[in-house]
Amino acid sequence: MNTNRSWNAVARGLHWLMAVLILLQGLVGWIAQEMERSPARVDAMTFHKSLGLTLLLLLLLRLAWRWTHPVPPPPGGSSTREIRLARLTHFALYLLVGAIALSGWVAASAYVVPWKLWWLMRMPRIVAPDKATYDLASGVHDALVAVFLAILAVHVAAALWHHFVKHDRVLIAMWRGER
Ligand code: HEM
Ligand code: HEM
Image (cartoon, rainbow, N blue to C red; front, side):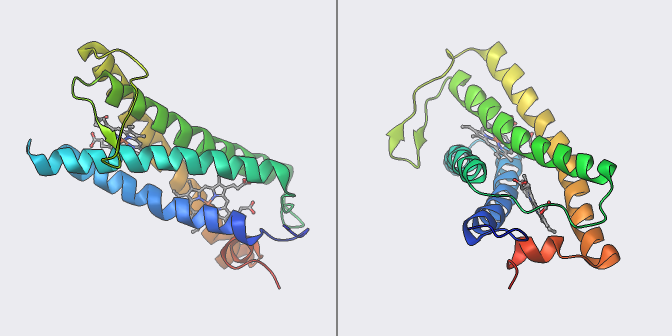
């Protein structure tokens, strides 16, 4: 269980697993976009789309876990503003990961060439193939990634501020729990 003061191993594991996979995902998406048209680029995109939908699944698991387990309270002495800002950024990060994955899925569906999840399973189109839909969804996808990176920067800065300036246990509680 999450104790009163810390995150349990599942919450911590999902947080750091997703953090690493999302950064990898962004990197692969960016590199794939820069590549010349080639079979390698198609593979890179298949990897990107597959990992993206896997991340969407992990997000749902993580939210389900969060809603069924207690959440550690903010450190004592936090102001109402700090608590609100933390809640807002956390909510935005969850929402953006979901929206990025969905807009990517719309773009991949609107693209003329179908794709297979992890090279195995032909994915159903959630919209009909159409150039204008593709352009719109991929524009939204890219814009949401930019917003996500800005909020992530705030999130990481806040974690470091807690650890090195406020000297509280916020980062430790997410890193290795509390003994
Ligand atoms: C957390 C999840 C995701 C992140 C962080 C992410 C990130 C990115 C990034 C950074 C790019 C390159 C943009 C550019 O350089 O212009 C990109 C492109 C793309 N992604 Fe994703 N992506 C995610 C999920 C998905 C999913 C689930 C799909 C499809 C099932 C997808 C489909 C695409 C497509 C089709 C492109 C090329 C078109 C475009 O640039 O929008 N992505 N993604
Ligand atoms: C893609 C990367 C990341 C995403 C999407 C992400 C997302 C989140 C979310 C949504 C929460 C809220 C947990 C909840 O209340 O349900 C959280 C908590 C936390 N994250 Fe991240 N995170 C990322 C990377 C990082 C990094 C790099 C650090 C540290 C440098 C970090 C440190 C923390 C800490 C300390 C907490 C606990 C905050 C608290 O107890 O109130 N995160 N993260």
